[in-house]
Amino acid sequence: MHQKKLALVNDVTGYGRCSIAVALPIVSALKVQGCILPTAILSVHTGFHDYYLDDYTDHMTPYIESWKKNGLTFDGISTGFLGSARQIDIVLDFLRDFKGPHTLAIVDPVMGDNGQLYPSYTQEMCDEMQRLLAYADVVTPNVTEACELLNLPYRSDRDLSEDDFAAMAKALADKGPQGVILTGIHNGPYIGNFIYDQGKMSWVRAKKVGGDRSGTGDVFTAIVSASVVRGESLEQAVQKASDFICRVMAYTEELDLPHNAGLAFEEYLTTLR
Ligand SMILES: Nc1ncnc2c1ncn2[C@@H]1O[C@H](COP(=O)(O)OP(=O)(O)O)[C@@H](O)[C@H]1O
Ligand SMILES: Cc1ncc(COP(=O)(O)O)c(C=O)c1O
Figure 1 (cartoon, rainbow, N blue to C red):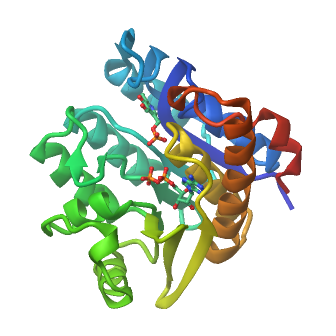
Figure 2: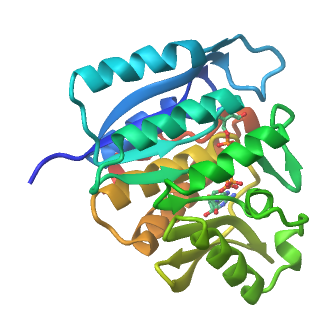
């Protein structure tokens, strides 16, 4: 038995509880060693009116080379927001070099939401993200991102049927990942995740608490990544993430924090098992 190691490919944002600032404490609480591969350094996340961003792309290759020379290996690799086509290319090379037969790759294709791509996202980046899929074991798109990855016109999650979700998940699985989690699916007062796990389909749903808060996707992916690397099923991992987010969202609402302050998860870290 050895402690699991998970490479976290994401930005380092100083304030606003997102990306690495969220992923590292969460995977540690789940008893997994988090190893950071930074993509950018930001003063605050992009939801604030002023942010300083230092792109780390040029440093990533020598940084990865050093990991290679030290002979590092990982049980899992979890990727989040990527800022340019060149950065996606570097991550593709990283996956090619570091994904051994027992390494699980979890790709959160952070590309857009509510039918809109993020302003920095180009068609070239969408194409590169599709290539990244081939290396993923688990992918966690929302419906907007799933449509982009499949070159489908956007349809709201509220207009899609169970058969539509199943077809989308299956089509994504055909591109590589045998685990697909379609996130953020609304149904009346509920918010759910459609799970495709090597052909088996299921739902994890919960009553939606409060509104949308920045960093929620990062909390979700961190819990799912650490849990699957520890050998839990996708359904168990998603259930754990959904339960945690509901608890923390309720507490964050109670504190009445602004939307861009993220989820106030600190008080609840010890409830993660
Ligand atoms: N307000 C909420 N109440 C309860 N669970 C939530 C809420 N917001 C998000 N979640 C959970 O977190 C998951 C990821 O959410 P979200 O950040 O909206 O996804 P994405 O960033 O992929 O669009 C959802 O599928 C759901 O399980
Ligand atoms: C640089 C950066 N990383 C991560 C996030 C969090 O993204 P999400 O709300 O999808 O978890 C944001 C949100 O604005 C961001 O600007």
